[in-house]
Length: 311
Image 1: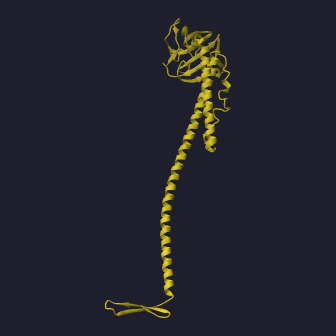
Image 2 (image 1 turned 30 degrees about the vertical axis):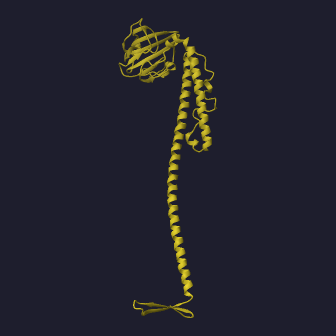
Image 3 (image 1 turned 90 degrees about the horizontal axis):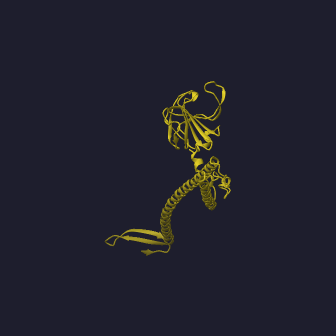
């Protein structure tokens, strides 16, 4: 290499030592070239580092995205569980309310003292059986939601204890009225659909307004008719427009009558138990089709049979 004043001369020799090429490079180009190469090296290092960092961050983002998706699915599952739990709470409250209404019906039929807690079954929390809306619940704050759920559960727990105490009280009162209950026509005498209810109606024969003293239950001919309570058969035979009819006296002023029977299975003077078959559904007497005409009389006055049905 030969150094000149402003330029540098670069000689290239072959294997025999003979100069084959000669280049003149400005002296100032060396530091510029060095800086340029250094810049390239720095840029390349920065690019490689940025690539690795971006690759790592991309992997982290994918992990976070997967974790977020998993978390969202878990939240949706929890929301579904909360809604299902809220619906279960509502179902339990509805069942308790039904039990309470059933209790009041028993008290009326058995002429028992009305429950003092009957009107406030859910009074411990001041809420009604339909006040917990699962859809609206999801808009509440989580802590508030948990507090409401706990309040509902505590309310149901208190109401169930109240209902248990009330039924225990009924049981004690019914012990002394067992005979009265046995004589109360509390079950349906036949399976079928009600074709004519108790009360005023338009006669299917005269088209005039008349008072229907019983309940017509339409069903297939030959369907068993059962006694809705214990009692004594006081009539079993043909009875004018009623066709083949059975009358049962249950005591305590309660009498039931069964008309249009196809066949009577019990004789007059027979004592029957609740659920025992007494006749078969028919179409005798004045009738438009197979059905049972069922009457309940209290002290000689026809009353609505449906008021006595437990089932």
